[in-house]
Length: 121
Image (tube, rainbow, N blue to C red; front, side, top):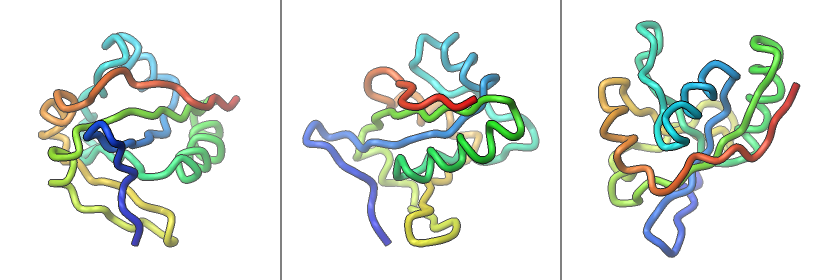
């Protein structure tokens, strides 16, 4: 199983496929935080590679929301290491599972802005 991409600045690069509603909430945060999970969403799932994020945004978010976006962001490596890498399918289908109740703390360890890298309609 591969590991998250670590940068020389002490951060780990993560991606998040998202739909327009969640992206609007990220925008409202100043591109600095992920919104609280809904009651039916007990886990926040950032993914470990861009290709996997693209597949979800393009193939799932567009179908369900009319648009899909891929975001990229950096999290302090020392913090993000507390979350084990989960394989959700094939070898490259890797995620972190962040419990919803820990999302505020997770957000506090994001370094820099959350960026949109791809948009699909």
